[in-house]
Length: 458
Image 1 (tube, rainbow, N blue to C red):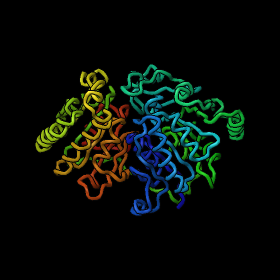
Image 2: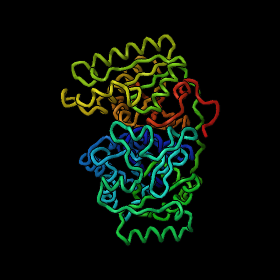
Image 3: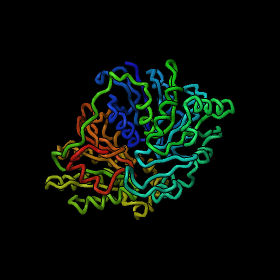
Image 4: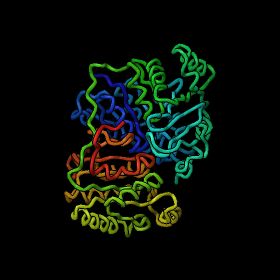
């Protein structure tokens, strides 16, 4: 069966977000940690789509370029109709870290793209792009106030890539000299031939990318038609964007409808207490921790300094795992965290620690520590279901656990599905996991991980 889509996620939580929207549409898809080989694909016959969970969101441009030349070239050899470089729906990036401009130039070179569509909006997640400006709901889904990105209470204070510009073309211009056109929300409502004419005009003008607006969910119908028209049977179409790309593609008419499978059921209750491991600095996650603690969860607040020092990291991890095991043995779920929001005093000393200690980058070091704690708990049989919160740390946590692939098994909350881990030969194999970005979920998210969903998510 030919592949409709291969996506490359710039972090782990974003990758599972894309996986979820494919699964909700009945698309058989699997997420890998590396571009799959024939051997790694063998256990998953009949795939319509696949993804690779990368970590380029935390890399500098030189590392991004080297990584993407290798990994996107490998995906090209699988001959999908579309290759999607999946970014966060809040366009997290800067010229120094996670540069989407660098990814644009590199991907266009790998696929010899004349013009690259960019779709950042994901209306179902509360992300709306209008006349090139991005607006984001506080949290995701139907609740929370919508803010212009540069005035967003959380994203404007992101610890690594704070948002200070809502015009995405201006934001992108800091990262690349390539001109970017705009297909605005009014032009998107025109008949398909007029929309294609707009794209050709931008191409002729010398634009190398085209940002595409979307305000309402139904706007993705037109976007899907555009992507289908641009895709070639022979050469993959390279696209950059949020999981709105997956939402648009499943509406595009490009699929073989005979291949549609039933969507996964809603997540059921856990048979044991659960563990939440959070490296997120988001106030959304902080509110979720507050709610969990008020509803029976135990708390382990990790001191970040000892985790970043080689001499004390191993003992700190072992002590945290031992304390967590005691809570689990008493029947209590536990949340383990390195931050309670952007104002947590544990964040302040981190700015100087890497240069003083010789530690690896903070996100990688904290993420691997959380992954190692999870591994200790899984190996002891104390827990079957875990959740990682925080896009910058989760990619490293997954690698520390030895994942090779993830398969969505149930809906949980929009942007964060319940998945089954594939990690043969490790304690994590076939355990259940959720990866949650900092902005994802309502305050009661963590108790719902214990009790499951009484009905399907909207």
